[in-house]
Image (cartoon, rainbow, N blue to C red):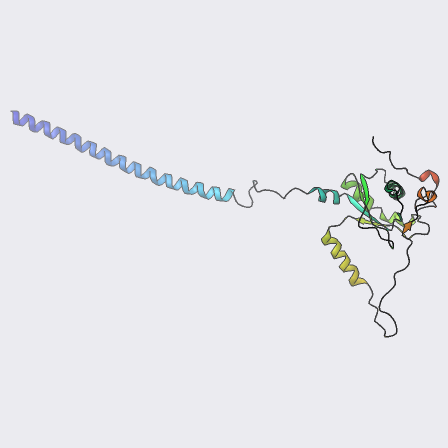
Amino acid sequence: MIREAIRAEFMSVQEELEEHRKKILALEKLISECNSQIIQVQSQLSTFELRTSGPSSPTTPGPPPLSAYEVERRRSIVLANVPEFMGPSNRDAWQWDFSCVSKVLAHMNIGTPPTTIYRLGKVSRFRPRLIKVVLPCTDIQKQVLSRTNLLRSFPTGSFPPVFLRPSLTKEQRDLRRSELLDRSPRIPSHPHHSSRIKSPSIPPLIPSSPLQNIEPMDVGNDHRDRVLPPPLSK
């Protein structure tokens, strides 16, 4: 009797162990399937990250901001052939330049005054320096450039006509200079003549006479057209 009871108990334990073994095998299979799914999801996530971080991503950084020099250049113009006042007073020279620039802008019906003006380069006895005119915004600059044909009727008296152009970068100036040289006529050299071409005489400088200091280059304009510079801030 005891042996049969022990044997029956042993068989019961064996059956329970077999059931546990089957459950363990099923769990191991389930874990293996879960691991495979995790690996697949990780692969899909990696592919998605590569696509979203490509060049077409909205997170791609834009162009660098413009420098202060470039912002000023884009709203500036350059005037050529404006006679230069030569005298000991820098203030008188600035008043002369401001009056000349104001008359040019008034002739072109530009109502907005410039932000600042200044001469470019070193002083020359043979040719007046260019004047850079910084305008309040690019829209005013474009408006001025669209009215350059009005300068044909601008009175300059005995001085050459006034020209203006947009402010250019060094690369643009070099390209324009090269194009002008290519378009200039080539004169063949002659053994009895010098190959140098003399430039026409241009009266570039204004003496420091008080009477001439109050008469800008366009002396034919009426007195009411004169524009005085703004007073200095205290």
